[in-house]
Length: 148
Image (tube, rainbow, N blue to C red):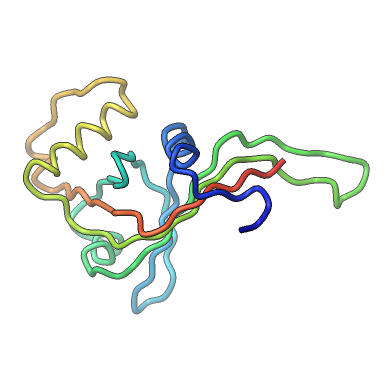
């Protein structure tokens, strides 16, 4: 494994817990597609939501593998030459296969998402829930990279 890279579950949970945005790398017959989404990690499963229509939802329901990334602790590194510029960060990169969360798992995922971003579970508008899909991504692989 490369220097600064680890598969440590605690490091993965730390970055996932602090990151605000997850970047999904998806692919369909039109080609690659990358989109930022809100997300939450519960155990080894990432939860995200989407409308039930559109390209993202079509790809997520297809069963095709996806990749994802997120980053925290971003800080610009500067210097007196161009080669010294860059960023310090901690990131998670991984992959998995999405599936629709159903039944109790759907509610668990939604409640966890709301708790992450709102700090508490809030009531949901039933009309919005009818057009919202909750996806679960069981991580096949994930690693943390720390760049100093």
